[in-house]
Image 1: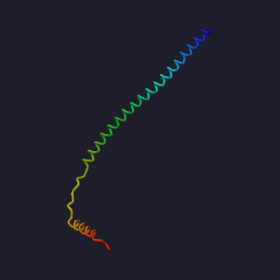
Image 2 (image 1 turned 90 degrees about the vertical axis):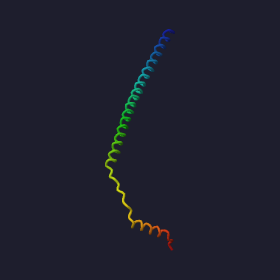
Image 3 (image 1 turned 135 degrees about the vertical axis):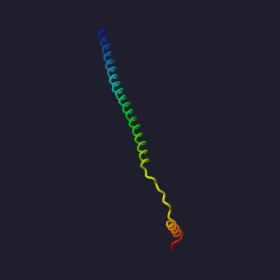
Image 4 (image 1 turned 60 degrees about the horizontal axis):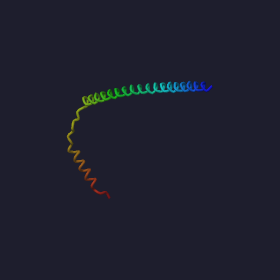
Length: 95
């Protein structure tokens, strides 16, 4: 009888080892799958970033090409006189 219990222990031990191995392989499969998907997503995001940079550069060039030239206006002498008068009024204390 002693020999039967030793054989049964070996079978149980072997079964537990196989179950642990199968669980480990299944876990490895899902972790590896998630890792490869993550790498694909990172590559796609990097490609998207490059395209956005190119689009931004193109938009800047287009905006610079279509930008109207700013014409500087010569200051009017009358405006300067009004400003001087406004400054003088600000200096006078009110009663």
